[in-house]
Amino acid sequence: MTLNLAVAADLSHPPIDVTAVLNHLAQHADNTAPTSIGYPGATDLDHTAVIARLGNRLWNNIGDPHGTGGVAHTRILEQAVIAWTADLLGMPTDDRWGYVTTGGTEGNLSALHTAYRRWPTARIYYSTAAHYSIPKIINMLGAYQVPVAAGPDGEMSYDDLATQLRKRRRWPAIVVATAGTTMTEAVDDTTRIRAILTEHNITGHLHVDAALSGIPLALDGRLHMDRAGDIGSITISGHKFLGVPIPCGVVLIRDSLRTPALNPVAYTATTDTTITGSRCGLAAALLWHAIALHGREGHRWRAAEARSTAAYAVEQICATGWTAWRWPHAFTVVLPTPPEPLRRKWLLATDGPVSHLICMPGITRDQIDALTADLATTITTPIPRPRTPDYSITP
Ligand SMILES: Cc1ncc(COP(=O)(O)O)c(C=O)c1O
Image 1 (spheres, helix red, strand yellow):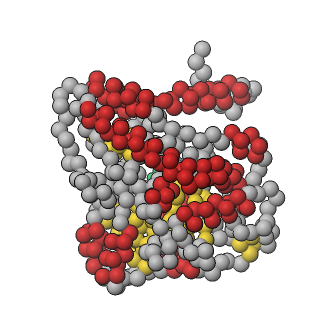
Image 2 (cartoon, helix red, strand yellow):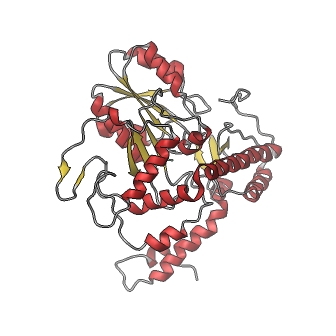
Image 3 (tube, helix red, strand yellow):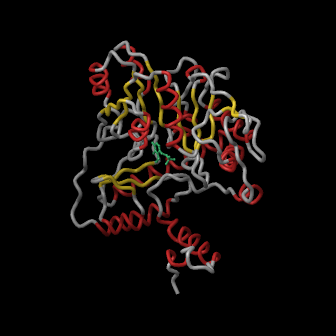
């Protein structure tokens, strides 16, 4: 008999069959996993060791990651995660600060809050392909927002950025670039953005939302925060490329760009530098574990394998007569939106006429073959190629 989850989980009608509810959730997730290829959570890493050893206890990294307060915490692992990520990005050791967040949104909030405190009259620019958390955060800050056009491939229009900046050149600018846009995994060119700011003699802050592509691009040497760099802060997600089974992330901010820390909070014995007070120490331990097990080389290999699967997906999908494309660095494969039953089965992410699958580490060629077979059966008439960007020059 199938379980009606809403009825079984209703807490107003005890006794509750807890085992049945938990089994149902786990079984449903297991059953849908082979066709869940639209969202970017890597599934190839085994976190059992951490969950088994630490999972049944409260680990609270309350307050600043360098604080000493709290009972059981994993701050030492959190500090190791921040140091590894900052080293990977080439951040100077004397000009770095960061912490483990609840995810990309909190990282963006922390970075933009920091930037806006420093530049309270700034206009905040972001492309229309940026994640929806960005305009939400700008609203929360009460700041003035300036959307900038993005091309059909998802990359920011630098001409439009220049036009928008020219109209507001008397105010500082906080510009949000994206490294791995949500729909197409486009990467905005921060060197170009900084050059436009310099050309217009505009001061301010450059933040990079690298929730999806931060680690892989840093491993490629394509994303860095060295002393000469243009970037003031970066957000990276932990449950995407690093496959942590709890939503989490890392935010990194140049220490010199932060306003002085607030007074210590007496009862927690830490400074209140983070967005949330209590913070998930288990997430920091899981991030640490994912990094410790594989190191730079292991993660480079994972990225290369995933990209190769994505290239295979484009090839196979195009061979059916359907259309698909990807950026050369991307795990994301973009295609014209297929019919609804196929989208539902494969949990493809869809934005109007465009859908995508994401070949995160853990996605196999067998899954791509099965998707391709389903796509082939939906084709009744040849599909015109949409305006696909020309990638003859690797961006
Ligand atoms: C580019 C980008 N930024 C931020 C986020 C938000 O991350 P989270 O859902 O962890 O808050 C996402 C999530 O998909 C994203 O793709």
